[in-house]
Length: 282
Image (tube, rainbow, N blue to C red; front, side):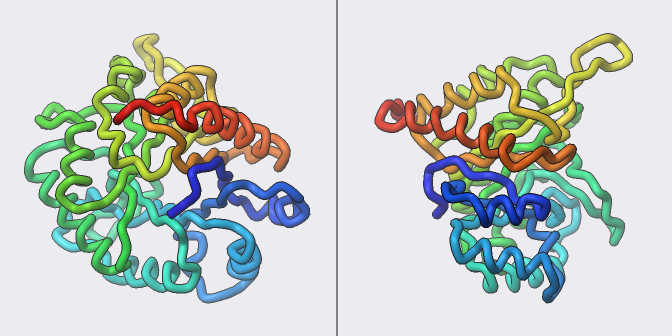
């Protein structure tokens, strides 16, 4: 398991700075699909980093929410090979779909929360855990719409998956802020309903604030800026309830200097330190 401290997403541009850092982040996280080749510079860097850091692998292309009966076996086998190679402390994926009928889309797309979808996702999570031989974490999505066909609240949907498969949950607090704002819901109320007892990791990232054609707030989960003040508040409220959890600061676009990312992780660690020993029963 990952240590309950603050970690940072790893970007190749930060390799030299990270190697020279005397105070290492609590863990690093990489996108699994970036390391599915057999060798080269990406693996040389990750091998060196793995020797000194706890590691989280984060998948973005498994399409767990796909309508297909079975997940892509070739993709699962590549994931298994990667996990066997690096023995990560955690593997996570998204409650989303990104492929259909052999067509792969560079996005994480929403799905309707229905009984049929729930059974399919449960089966897909089970397929993944069986293939990898490990418990996975499933991340709540950043969404921009909701389906009229949905009959199960998202928090209940995630809780049922965790209860029936034994998987854990990755709570992305930024995704909560983004999705709830876009759906005109209260993110704090959403978090009171979230099955926090299953949370094995937390993500924090920046988002872009815009307006839709009707002048209503529209938040975009772009991972391209500092974590917002509201997301920090929501995060601190979660840690006060459940205590420290492994917390990753993501920054995937307009990647800043290493020192900027370290400062964000340091802020997360300060919240974790304050939350130690003060958690309510979740």
